[in-house]
Amino acid sequence: MRNLWIQTENPFATWVADLTKVCDSPEPLLEFIAQVIRSGSEQLVFTVVEAPEINFVRSRTSDLIAQLRQSYKNNNVVDLFGFTGAAMAPGSPGSSTVEATMAWFDGAGRRVLGACNDLGYLLQTLDPVEGSIPIGFMKRFPPLRVTGQRLIYAGSPPKLQNYRPTRSVTVRFAIHSDIWFPWVYGSAHPHCDHKHMFDNRELSIVHTPRLNEFLIGLAAKTREIGGEWFIDETETGEDAIRWLDELGIDLDPDPPQLQMPSSALDAEWY
Image 1 (cartoon, helix red, strand yellow):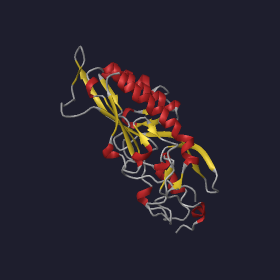
Image 2 (tube, rainbow, N blue to C red):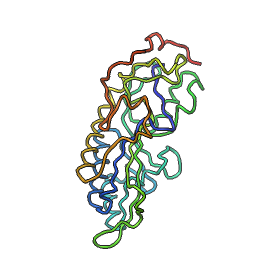
Image 3 (cartoon, rainbow, N blue to C red):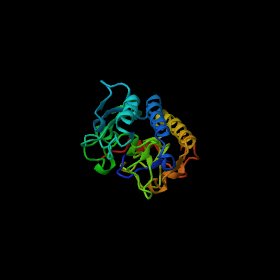
Image 4 (cartoon, rainbow, N blue to C red):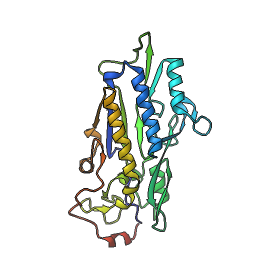
């Protein structure tokens, strides 16, 4: 078993676009939304397949950006990723379905590449022995979770109606799996001691550069329109913070001092 990554309820890392300072300006927010959707699809890290909240299905409505712009034109609503559904949990009522192209190891130990909308379910299908991976390590989320708010405007010039001074207007970009990181603890592995680390670079080198490009572009766009971009340290693990900064994940860090021997990959799972 070479898939030593997991996916958990709590994020491994969360990047935040705080757009509170520009929330009274719908057009910059619409530009930001367009960049997230366009870049997410181009980098193959966040492609919206279905969004029941706004009756969007990619197979029959190809232009999500145009649909969201039309929502503002017709209804004075800027859907700043409220449409993804707060949980973004595949199969849950109102949740969106989004895809990312990821790398993982198949049952024969070969690296494969494919579209994935639920890393937790994917790992469940790869469990070498039923029940050997705890259910808490297979949380049902997409590879990249993007959540935000639905903003309602009125008047001319437009004025935000559902905003309270004590509430920030943010879009959050969370990863709940360490599959993105160069080194992992292999938390479900029989030999895991949370001291020695497994080398995950063969997978991370495939998908993480695209995530980094996505984040770099969004950081620049956020600042361009007058917002703030940062890491939410309360939603970023103490170990994960070693591998990343506000512009993405470091794929070539100093190797950990304690590494699992390659022979551990031959361990019997139970």
